[in-house]
Length: 353
Ligand code: PMV
Image 1 (cartoon, rainbow, N blue to C red):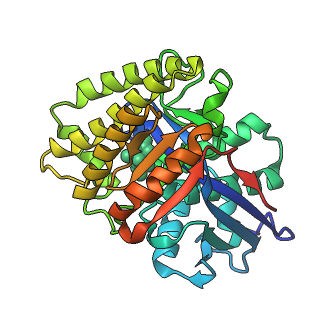
Image 2 (cartoon, rainbow, N blue to C red; image 1 turned 30 degrees about the vertical axis):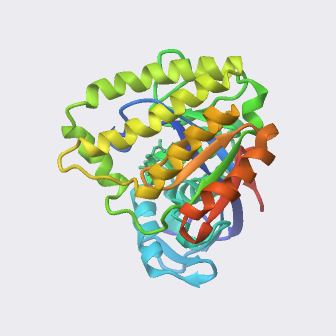
């Protein structure tokens, strides 16, 4: 069959941020569908930039032709991953069979910081692919564009689907969020108190070592976890209560739920079979210091954790000076090489080209 795109070539480039979950997604079924609804802050400074150049393939075969560069260097390991991801989504993007692709990827944060780059990179890639499709076929309205990008990002890495929207995104069907879906995330900021749109997130790197248990394996272990069903109910209630706290601008209630979610995530790991623990002694030390600081100074500083030992410290921007002083003086000594990344809630993905 001749190439229907034989005179077409182009390049798209998107920047997409990482996100941090406030109510966690932990447990999945089917093709990356969540067992419970989750909500996250979209970040600003931790992002991936991805550019995809496409030109018609010389050959007639259907194999996807890809060259992948990470930080301007060839990277066969990442290339193989992206290749198999692209092969898995040809049904959504038939054009992939007709082009030779050259992808360049860059992260704003160093590779070994312990920050997972899958959310930012998979969402950036999904945005590029939907953008190419739109350039070839046209016709996607803005909300359809981002909905499809979110869905494709989800297929690459579940939580990546939340990264394409500004400020806050909800992923997973929830009875009180009318447009929510298991297939893609939806933006969620219009009814939220403005204090949360400039919220700060200081990411404290306790260890940048690769995790001993991947999140894929962690999700799978939820299937045999004796607390799984009660966890999914708890997540639903926590999301209802978190939303109401965020609408009211109640940062104490917000913090209480967010910390409860972080500890629940790690408790689920500890009581799965086999059990495992991703927090380190310094994670606990920092948690303890935060609690004391909050009680003594009355500053609303709360923490959350991903599936790893590093902490995300959440605080309103008006408290940035005092909290960041506290981090520098009291907490950095418990971090690997005193590493911290100061981030904040961001306005979502942007098109660069
Ligand atoms: O997107 P995954 O499969 O890496 O899972 C992410 C799981 C957590 O980061 C622990 C929680 C979340 O909702 O982001």
